[in-house]
Length: 155
Image (cartoon, rainbow, N blue to C red):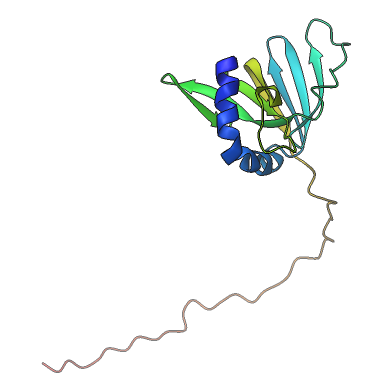
């Protein structure tokens, strides 16, 4: 994980702002990320709780609350790709933005291989029902209003 953390630290100065903007948009609403050992619960991309599978009553460490879900790290042909799209066995990447310009390796948490990711989109506001109106009666359109006339040929 140290190699991955150092890679993310090098990538952060040029990408952190984009990660935060994209993450709040892509992961809007409630989402759950599951690994073999834990279930992470997010609201709008921000970690609100983590439960261990073997002891669901365990409390989330205060140091983890507030981490932002950046995306998923997957290995493709011996190269790593960081994407907001979940794939089975990808690694979840969590990031804590710091007020300092330079992030450190402790600002990142990389999960173990994920087994599931589910999302409930954020509500888009109150839904209004349209009033039912009676069906309208329309006059049918005539078959054609164009008349074709044979023209005299000049040749």
